Image (spheres, rainbow, N blue to C red):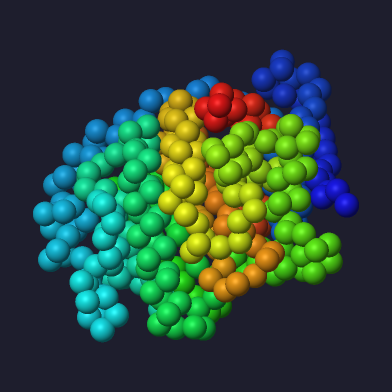
Amino acid sequence: MDIPFNKKEIASTFLSPLNEFKPTTVTIEIRQDPLTRHRTRLVPYRFKNLGDPDLAALLDESLKRLCPFCPEHLPQRAARFLEDWVPQKHIRKGEAVIFPNAFPYEKHNAVCVLCSRHFVPLQDFHSQWIVDALSACQDYFRLLVKRDSTILYGSINWNFLPLSGAGLIHPHFQLLAQNRPTRYEGEIHHKTKRYFQKFGRPFFFDLLKQEQKKEERYIGCSGRVHWLSAFAPLGVMEIMGVREKSRSFLTLSEKSLREFAAGLIRVFGYLASKNISSLNMAIYFSLEKQDYFPPLVKIIPRIELPPLKVSEINYFERLHHEILTFYPPEEVAKEMQPFLT
């Protein structure tokens, strides 16, 4: 069975002031995600290249405030795990440090500081930082599973820079572990499980094979991690990473973590080339043994629309639960392919 990629076009006709008030037709494409069925509207507006991000003022302002994630402050400013669980109080791997979130969103909610540097532009990230951070995250989730067998769902989340919702510019992940998934996480778990029960194959493996065959949105691979531009993105762009033949994040080898980190660094290079400096990222995975849901990575770049630096999020997303995008996913994939070769 082929996975359906449903879309339709609608046309709006009016007398346009941009065309001497002649009758003008604008075509909008409405796409439906093949798994969740959420809708994304692709509108044919084009913006000039985003200007170089001026982050100097942001950095200066952040340096005026004490950063609890910098190494000279972290021992006294960061929360600590209970000693009967983590006797060392923090989980460390290389420069990565994990500790409880002092402002938790969930019972099990931790922070992973990626590196000692206070500010890192996307193009300056080192793959070793990401490898060490993900390895430390594995340690955290393994300890959790041993401590609480009811925890079934895990995710590693990233708000990078304030435009994405980050409260601190020091690079850090937020880790969530739950016995009940978030709404979106629960939806993709439920629908991939139902797909597996019906067809006997994981949905995302079939999606990967089909996208590789179509060659429209497949970007490339870093080892066994494959990168796609989502058909119906959850933001102005959505870059997905799927590791072939993998069932569990907790059992990924160091080699697998390096493959993921290598791909992520290349994605960052593409975004930086587009003058995009901020993003949201999530890695979703199951903490129980199952065959239908591999670790899944989603990256949503965050931008401000010129010339007034308008947020790309508006009433369509917040109050109608539909996404607007100006970047055709097929063009994104074509532009990004050289970065994955």
